Length: 315
Image 1 (cartoon, rainbow, N blue to C red):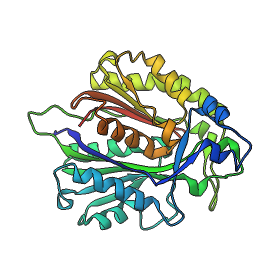
Image 2 (cartoon, rainbow, N blue to C red):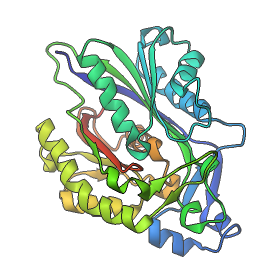
Image 3 (cartoon, one colour):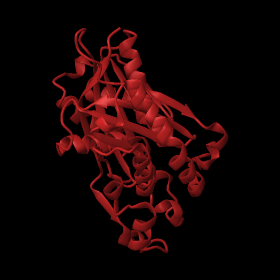
Image 4 (cartoon, helix red, strand yellow):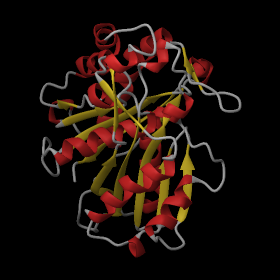
C-alpha cells in the first residue's frame, strides 16, 4: 500500500490585529494579565463579511500554488472546522468550487482543536486505500463569530485564520511522509469546551482543560513518535494545538524534545482551534526554521475532548 506525504503548505490570516491593549478597552483586563495566563500578545479578527470558506480558500490556494499541482489534480478536499455558520453546503465543496477543483470527494471534519490532525489522517487513509491520489487538507476557523466579547476568560483567547496542506501519494520506493495517527477522545469530559445551541458563545472550563492537556497529551504524543519509529530526540519541530503557551511548554518539557523547534504561534495569532496546527506549521516552513524532510510532531487537542497527532516529514 502506498503512503502519503505533505508537499506544500499555505496559510491565511485576516488583516485586523487585535492587541491586548485593544481588549483592555472592551473588558477588564490588561496586557500583563493576558501574557502571564495564556501567552498571547495579539490575535487576528476577520471582518463581518469574511467567512470560514473565504479564509480556507485563501490558505488552500497558496498551498496549491506551491505544490506544483493544479486544481485538476486534486481529488479529495477535507476541511477541519467547528465555526462555520452555514450547515450546508459544507466548507469543503465551497473551497473546491472557488479553486476550480472538479468532482472531488469533499467533507468537513468537526473535532474542534484536534481537527487538522483528524483531517490529515483521513486524507492519508484515503490515499493508502486507493481512494485518493492528491488531497487538499485545511483547518479554518472564524471563532470571533462565537466569542462573547464581554467575557474576559474567553475573549482574550480566540482568533481567526486558516492553514492548508497538499497531500500526495508517495512513490513505491519512497518512504512515507505521514506517520500513523494516534487519535481518540475523553467524551466524559466533553463539556469542558463547548459551543452549544443556536448562534452560541464559546464556553470552557479552563482549569479542567489545562489539567487534562498537561497530563494526558504528552504520553499520547509519545505514542505517535513510537508508531512512526522516530525517537523524540530526532524530532525537529513540535507543532501542537496553540491553546495556551503554558500548556505547550508543559507538554514539550514532558516529551524532552531537546533538539526541536517549539511552535509558539499562539503569541501572535491566539487560539485558532482547527487552524492552529497548519497555521503554525506553515509559518515555520515559510521561515525555513525546519529542514525539508525533517520529522515534525503534530498534535491537536481540545473541544470534545478530542485529540489526534502524527509525525510528518517537513515538505
